[in-house]
Length: 308
Length: 327
Image (cartoon, rainbow over all chains, first blue to last red; front, top):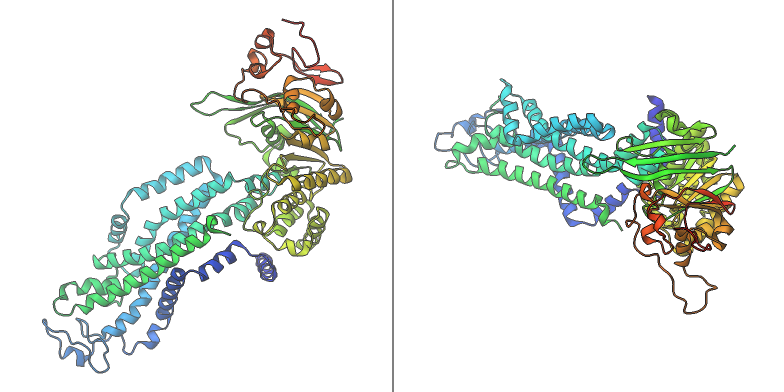
């Protein structure tokens, strides 16, 4: 294991010292020249940074009901901005601004968690199907077809409904299951295309071992679309998680600071304080847009047709 | 004892819903150690499929290979996948037509060479890297140390083909199969690559099977030439005999259809009529008969056999340079 790791490290060093431009470097260079990519990347980076530092910069504890807010809280009135509370109170007398900030953390956790789990499982299924082909491929792909046949939100709702006491992991699992077949199909498709490619035939003609062919020649050439899909899935995962929370199928803790949940709880209060729904919604839209822009430009940058 | 003996090799492609297609139909030829043998024919004549069958690279499903391919007394068609993998790249190498698509775009040239050296010659990464630089230098790539870390798209077409040749020859195979190695290259580069190939095989004693549709390539390189048509060998001759006194009307037509420097001014090229799809099955007669200027009635009735002729082999009822007496 350690031997493997040192070899890997050596190889990375070799690559770093080399004058060659790999596909990845080339794509990076093109990303840096695209304004859309930069906007997407900036939004994404800001969001991730915010999610990490939000507990430290939030002016108040997002889970405490403050008496000065609750004092002014009536069914027809929710206090607006006041000293110390930038955006005023939410419907429970908690600091709305702090909750918005900290909400980024939950949203990131759900988005990244669901994407990582969905992509990993999907890639294993698609990779195995693409590497072996034949009967293995047929069986695995028919199974993913069954998952694909169900509308994704409906599937996520059914899975989330299976858990009596939801946590954020309920949401993560429900959303990730939905993305599994997409990743499986995608990787399987590009692996199959690689299988019949000239350079894989050439490697076979050199007697290269099957394992090496799969991991060194087929997989790295198939990853481009999967990476792109992952950034796009991040956006839809966040939206789906919000939808699940909105339907009350996510976290069973009603006070959890999470944008989708906040949006859901605010729906009855639109006439009292519309900002309670407006700000979480805007936050979700901006983040989803950021990931989508990044994903789209990544797809363009990795497209071999655009290479010069 | 020949290095490679191909005996009665046939490849039939079967697909559900279509009629079986015989791509290679009873091909036999020998390659002696160090010898350069050409396989010539137009597209669809079965040259490449013959090469893939020898290497065991045809898909197991859908392609039915029969006959015998013995390489140094081992029947390649009977080897297990693992045994085959151990020999490919070490004993038999292959160079493909399109140098760009035959190289893996995401890993460096260096890794693609060292991979083979580590696999078959048990070298460490360090030894292999040194050897790879050496190999690149031998195939005429300047500044090999820098090139090792470059990626295929950074090399020119000729350079890529040189790199592929270096990879194929890395383990000093005894047989190299080159499948149209110059077709995707500029004419100026073609000559360089051919000179390189012939130089290397002479130097290392590697036998070469040269697959091409280009008679110019054959003229410069091959000791013996097999002309293929419709999946069968129609003429086999030593290089000079082939160019000076080709016997089969197909070979004759191929030669007449290329421009010659010593031809009188204004002389027209003579194309071969029709296309390779206008043939009749070998079982019913001569596949070339529908396009053959010398065709006789017998050509469409009796299948010609490959018979000794003038020091070579010929499959024809009415060869060029013989008055038609039959039929």
